[in-house]
Length: 481
Image (tube, rainbow, N blue to C red):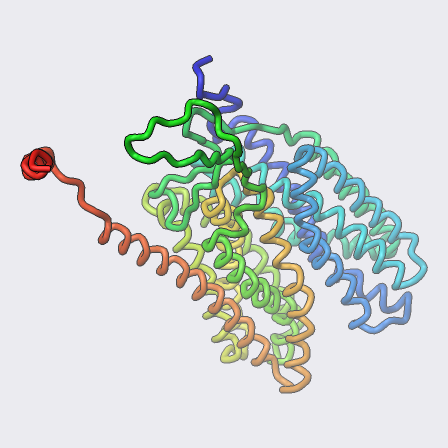
């Protein structure tokens, strides 16, 4: 092999083939994690009647599952990075299924906090991030479409599981329904077994194809630093012969796996995700209570949530397909910012909507834009940090969602108690989403200004005639000296 070059250890993403099996498995992972998390609230009435608890006490189960799933997302990334996505998903499937199985035999609400909240949440965390990251390894040209299909499992799963679980509770009680649900979640082990690891990294001299994003492909992209050794050699004075012996001291370092955390672009993206997570969950929690307070019937209020879930699916798939088109692919980050901003505007106008006919367009628009930006979160993160660091970066991204997911619903409820109205809750959600879009827009604007300033002040290379003229001008001075 030629010196200075490394052996190729992979190829470019196949953009199909077994990748579609991986997309299907990731789809089932989102069904068994995010959709199941949303449907846990169906058991709350049963828990209240059986344990004699209040709604606020049972609601902590949902908060714990959601928070621990996101809080432990870096653990899932680390397991997938150290061993494989297959190991992480299968281990997560065992833990989450075991958690639901033990919950079916629970004798107290505190025990449900441990089994359904902590254990199931940890299992979901091990599955969720590695499965999403593996999709990015199999796709490049159709990445947004692949993620749109994979992430639509959350909406489709909610739409299907909600009535099925309600029927199971009526037939077999909440214990039997949890027992069956644990068997369904155990299929995560099958999904993990089908997730074939792939290495899409090809290294040559001074070149690395994995994780790099061409400048037209993303408005906000960072070429991930290579793990290389930097050697500091002693300086030599002009005219002095360099010492042929090797230097006595060398200083070397290697970039760490989490080097992307120091990148300014990723820091701006992370701050925007904090505001995003603080605002996106509130409408899902308070849309039905707000509709009921506005005089909407229970059937129509439930229909609003169904419409929101269906349009969430449409947004996942259609927006992913649209942003993979040649005309929109260079502007995927702008499309993401636009979808978040429009979702925030929907929330700001929500307090003015006081009937089913007015709330129905809100559910349509909010559901569509929510599905749109959710499908683009892994894509935008990949464009920023590169495919090489995508798994670890997604772990950090979903970790940032944990605390806002935990505290934003209680804060929204506190606003309702203080103001005796849901207007403040929706205004808070809209302000947080708009702040997220504004922060990311500012980061993009700053990068563009810096790029233009760099190009403007860059020295213009001399032409061949100008160079020869400069040399002729210097010759008399050199000769005189």
